[in-house]
Every structure is written in structure tokens, then in C-alpha cells.
Length: 78
Image (cartoon, rainbow, N blue to C red; front, side, top):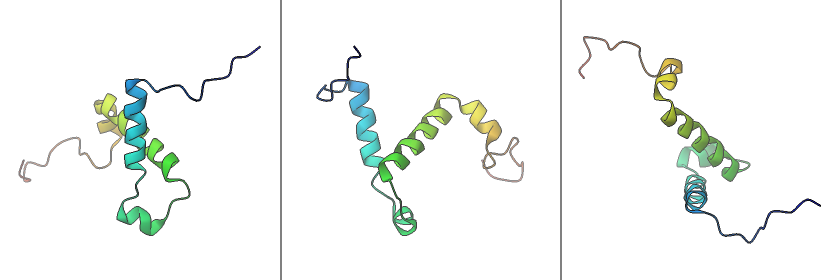
């Protein structure tokens, strides 16, 4: 017999923080409100997962980014 997860279980500290992050991020920004969202909660989870991945692996993110130049232009201020 398979045991079902206890839906009344209290989340751990990390789970509670993750839930809070998702709830906070699921409040749509003005430009997101204008575009609309079918599921702000799932959208927030996806955005945060991608952000966490970039934070955990910054060098890989930098290599794939089209916003981060490989070499800084010497004529641009730092």
C-alpha cells in the first residue's frame, strides 16, 4: 500500500521560504499584468527556478547570456 503525502504537514524552513518567494513573485508586475498570465503561480515558480539556476552557476549563465559581453569594451566606463 502506498502512503499518501500528508497535506496538513507543516513545510520545513526552506520549503516555507520557497513558498513565500513564489507567492511574492506571483504578484504580477505592471508589464506582466498588461500582458496577462493564465497562471501567475506556475509562472513565478518557473522564473524563480531559472533565476536560482543562474545564481548557482554564474559562469555558465554568463557564457550563454546575450546580455553579458565576453569582453568589456575599453571605451565604456566601468
